[in-house]
Length: 268
Length: 272
Image (cartoon, each protein chain N blue to C red):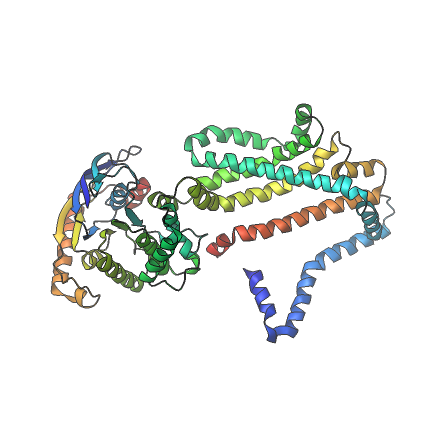
């Protein structure tokens, strides 16, 4: 469903190589997490996959079609929920806008908006404005907007990095529930190793910049995840240790000269 | 937001008696200083021997006689119509040019120094030039107003459009919000706080230029009438014209605030 082949990105202005030679594939219906040391080009990777940034070399294919701009069947949930929702629109208008641009009939739009808002537990606040909601609720709106779009591939760029720990746990379970119900192919980017293992059926470990895949780990935990029991499993701790060790190795092997801040600046 | 809260507070029944007191306090706060200033003026004008300093009742009388007459239709309303026409035209041009310039890095690099240069020219010096080019009728006066108002609107629009949030812009790209929808939902709304700031500056410039345009080669209008009174030593009438201009400016700015509150309600709440 999603094929990334030999992806390479060198920023022309700075001449810095952010992504080296990166390849991986996601099958239809898979949920994979991408994790790597901070400043390892995760944002660059996401923007290339989303078609927001043209790679220097290599290709991204979604359902066999090469990506040259944002594909029709893809939705993204950005980290900065406060900046990705339109503050001058209500929750409902925010979720509905992409559907209007898709030229869906009014009745179908209303149905999708209602369904997706209730899926994220926000059925009762369609007329609220984003700034009237807490950070976690705003991110739920962004997730609802992505779901209503009915994408074949869902990208999530550190979506819970800016919410508090309890909200984060709730939102992780929300993502799992939705994924189990809809089976949307999901690429979840995070810097949090625990989150990656808890959510992913697969964890793709990245090196420091210029980024390559250092390991692709299958998460052989029970399919039913639970914040308490799953995280308490012996196997969970082993996987956690394994990923952690790989990331440390990756960091030491190729120390990144660039600060993570520079990385983000370049990617924008 | 606070004013809404206040209104809600006043409408609740149990607080009725104290609400009356609250209203009194509000009125006092609103009118206290103007009343004090008028009293001060009164005291000054009564003690002053000067012919040029009429008392408030004299000015008030002149105001009623001068402006509740044919002059309202011959001078005041045409002036206001030209003011609004020039302001509207400047808004169209300023926003219309500001959006493409703000969206394009190249266009901006090419246009910005020139824009700053034109902005730096004091608009009143353009009046003689515009008179030569456009004659001395309504068109000239409106053009003078446009020539001054357009710069703050244009430059603020450019700045507002340039500063639109990248994440929001990416969101639009991802969800295929393009063309007219992008302009309506992202560009204009995103830049609206800056555009409104430009419009507010332009409003006061428009009033100034309305008066100045009528002081040159004119036979009607508020600016013309005030100069006419001054030359004819009709001093209270001259003062009444100045008073009318002050009231006009005040009224327009109150109106502007109402519009702004509607357009930018999300913005204030967003930041609060």
